[in-house]
Every structure is written in C-alpha cells, then in structure tokens.
Amino acid sequence: MRPKRFRSGVVWMVVLFMLLIWPSIQVYNFLSPKIEASDPLKMLYEVVQFQMNLLKGSMQEAKRVHTTDQLQKLKLVAYSAAFAHERLVRAVGKEKLPELSSMNKVVEMITLLQLNGDRPLADSEKEVISTFADAANKLVDSYALIYNSSGHWIASQRKELILADKELISVLDSYFAPQ
Figure (spheres, rainbow, N blue to C red):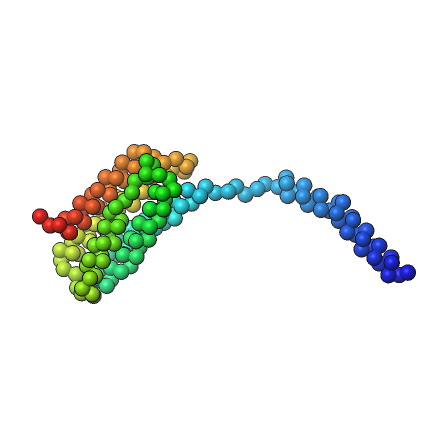
C-alpha cells in the first residue's frame, strides 16, 4: 500500500502545479515589462557608421604609409564599408540614402597601386592618399548626421553626402586621369 500513497502524492503535486503555480507564472510573464525589439534599419545604420569610422581611422593611418603593401588594411576597410553601405542603400532606398561610388574607387585605386607588388609609394601617390584622407573626413562626418535619433533620414544631409562623394571622386579621378 505504501507505493500507492507515493504515487498519489506525486499526482497531487503535479495537479497542484498545473492549477496554481503554472498559471501564476504565466500571469507574471504576461504582466512583466517586455524588451522592445530594435529597429533593424537603425541597427544596420549603426554597423555602417562603425565601418565608416574605421575607414576614417584607416585613412588617417594611410597618410603615414610608405609602401603599397601597407595599404592592404585600408583596402579591406574600404571594401567592408562599401559593402555595408550598399546593403543599407538596398534596405532604405536610393531616395533616402545615396550610393557612394567613391568607396569602390578607393578599393580600385589601392588595387591599381598594388598591381606591381610591394613597392615604395611615389610622392604623388602619397599626396593623393593624403588629399583623399582629408576629403574622406567630410564624407564620414556627413554620414554621421544623415540618420537622427528619432529614426528619420535627413534630406539635407543626403545632399551633403552626395557633395562629399563627388569631391572624393574628383580627387581620385585626378590620380587616375591626370590632365
């Protein structure tokens, strides 16, 4: 007979749990504050902004390089920033965020410089890199202001971003196609 009581005690505990404790847990979970889901576009913008800041830092470091091999970090960061920006443009739309073709031109420029292997940079190449690094600061600073904290894209900053992109392209074109 002792085993029967043990079984009935376990059954009563399960029934008690189902009737009292489990509904109490459900009510508590229902009434407790929930963590709000983050906006995926805002999170993607934050990723791109982080990449742009990395690009800005890499550009400042690139002012001090002496060989083409030392530009590899800048090339990877520029490619990563361009890739992330292209994904954000696809998500947001071209009417809110412009494409930045200067980012891909940076990768092209460094690739062209590295075609002949690791070699010392010419003074004209160092000058172009320095000029481009200074112009890239404007692009990154404009990028930081294009999206506000309330989740809206700022049209006036879009225009600034387009101007900064054109300026970067003109700097690179002066190297690619000298007059």
